[in-house]
Amino acid sequence: MSRVGVLLLNLGGPEQLKDVRPFLYNLFADPEILRLPFAWMQKPFAGFISTMRARTSRDNYRQIGGGSPLRRITEAQAHALQDSLQVKGCDAQVYIGMRYWHPFTEEALDRIKRDRIEELVILPLYPQFSISTSGSSIRLLEQIWAEDPELQKIKYTVISSWHDRPGYVQVMADFLRKELDQFGEPDQTTVFFSAHGVPLSYVTESGDPYQQEIETSTQLIMEALKRPNPHILAYQSRVGPMEWLRPYTTNVIAHLGQQGVKDLVVVPISFISEHIETLQEIDMEYRHLALESGIQHFRRMPAVNTHPDFIDTLSNMVLEYLDQPFLDFSQVFRPQKKIKLYPQERWEWGMTTTAERWNGRLAMIGFIALLVELISGYGPLHLAGLL
Image 1 (cartoon, rainbow, N blue to C red):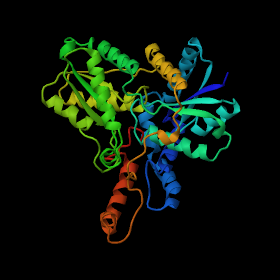
Image 2 (cartoon, helix red, strand yellow; image 1 turned 60 degrees about the vertical axis):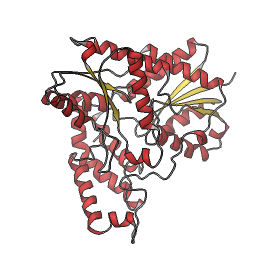
Image 3 (spheres, helix red, strand yellow; image 1 turned 90 degrees about the vertical axis):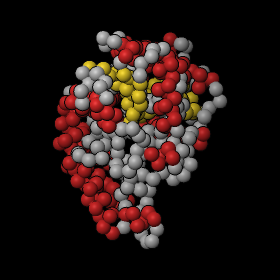
Image 4 (cartoon, rainbow, N blue to C red; image 1 turned 180 degrees about the horizontal axis):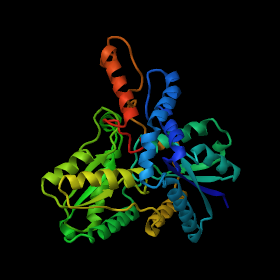
């Protein structure tokens, strides 16, 4: 029998306050997050910004207990998934690969090679696929795979999206139903789906399926809920001065308060684990905004974490993918055109539309604004609650 492994992919987060600055350095040193005009500037700039931003970011993490719970929760999910698979007759070893903090993806791959895994299921812990989350982690894996003959001996398959998985949809509906029942008028309470945003250009220019998958998940959850509640979808954690998916969560909360909505339950539709964006951004910042806007009762549906029904869904997915023809990296979604990251994929000088937008004073103003915002923590580049 083949040695089977499952690799769970996630973002990662600082576990202690002393981890915040190096975590931010890893984040900003990644050109997928922030691309500078010259490659040699990336690491020095990451060091400068991470040092300047560490104090504010540490304050945010201090508010939720002094660090991110993401590793602890992800490890608990891995253990629960491994147990569930063993109960179902699959003696698989489950690994964790984080993008920006320990255990890094590279660390997980070293363990996989050491354990001589022969068949591997790669499972991003993002229900909805985006080129900036699942796509980024999978691209990193693809690069490492191409350079490592030992990894190339492993038969692997990729589960890139599971946004419409019946088990996932049902457990989300069950969690939502329990939260609604805490209100005086459960069927009249407004359901607010808040998803992590992405730049609009990812969807309109690069064909990112993220928005469509978020909308599909929202619709399926409401259908599974089988209640007449009014509901709305918005996007949080906008990054950069460009247009992101609308409407924005902050704008919608304020608008709902102005419309006279008194009861609101927030569903973190794109998050399956508690972390800074649920515990601090939603529970603290958005709660404060809601109460200020006139909403009287504000609740947030907890993340599914290690709920048995959720873990059962993950284990069923793994078993199904092991029984199907394996999907390699080339079959994962690819952008229809080059992604325009912020500031942009590459800087051009000369009489072109892109160059004119960034040349001269505009480029300097934009870069200074970026510096001020990254240092102060205020402005449109309020990076996903991580800053």
